Length: 114
Length: 114
Image (cartoon, rainbow over all chains, first blue to last red; front, side):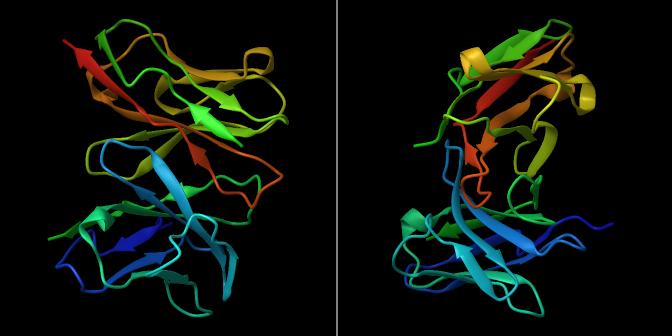
């Protein structure tokens, strides 16, 4: 049973470019969470999605960030016009349902903005 | 607002010594509580979780944690630390009143001396 898959594992972008981070949940999981880990900090919640629906985006920056989880394919976290402050590790977690379920984490995508 | 505090940023113990990592949560109702471990450059691995019932929970790799409502704590313990336990440890909480997102502590970095 494959775990949560994230790609790419490392991503380098120049300021102003776009970053696309992908997350494939565990088989049978229809709930996806995205978290961001800044250097020397804990993980901060960004967004919670189910298939084709954004359930909670209270942790998403108001501008430049968006997320989707289409009916087919992986969940995508998109960052437009990246800035140096976006450099971080971005983790995806999945669970079979929402509240009260264990979240299983992927290996993360390390984004470096030059 | 819900919060999780890990008072110790760094802890160093000798191999074979006992370990206790502290975690305090702030929330009126009983939260769901988790401990995750993160090795450098890796994702998060679930060590153990508490949802309800027995307040002493056993996890993988010989770890256990005890939920103490009166102290709002969920401390992680291991009777004898191995060099391979050196990593960063995160306490996290979720509640039934939100969408299932997890609130993480700042993390505790464990160093093991030979």
